[in-house]
Image (cartoon, rainbow, N blue to C red; front, side, top):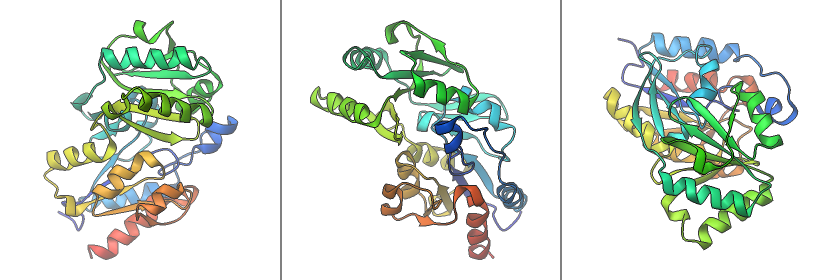
Length: 281
């Protein structure tokens, strides 16, 4: 037993736990985890706290980083489409896309040939249709090569997420395309970056899956804290007792009421654990 027994802390990975923007945008090397974060998480877990990563990445895109991150709880992957137990190597929860989503996704690609899509297969494979420069940047960042497919209709199910990659103005047109056809209401559609548009089944978001994780761990939401920087993190930031954000977060995260701490390059989780240390003293 320790002061953080019965407390869950869930953090986004990219540009929160680890600042990866320069690796994505400019092809720079992916930096190491800030030592402040590593030390703070070790202390938090030693005092009984449960720490989980909650990422938009597919499992395949996070696995090469998983062993570098101190964590002692299952993680949210695919932007809330799945909960994965890194200790047992098993999915605990899934909320998956169906064949209709593939058909609609292909209709988008037919209408916007400049866009690429990554299809996140639950079996730890990432398929890509129309891969473009943004896909290649994403491969560099995740260190997970995509398997090219001629069409989304050729991609096998089950899938956790579709990730559309294009210039932001094209992604906005894709959003309009989905709304005009009355398809948008069937999905969670969220920008996780200027060139990335995420699509998961309705209800599959980080907030919902963090709630499921807390339930599995027997932790009340009054003792759940979340950290994130992008629009796809807002559902978990607002579900938590308190949401935290790095200073490099997007304006929408500030506007949702998150408590802003230091920049991700400076060790955000260390600041958060320091706040919790005073709260649970």
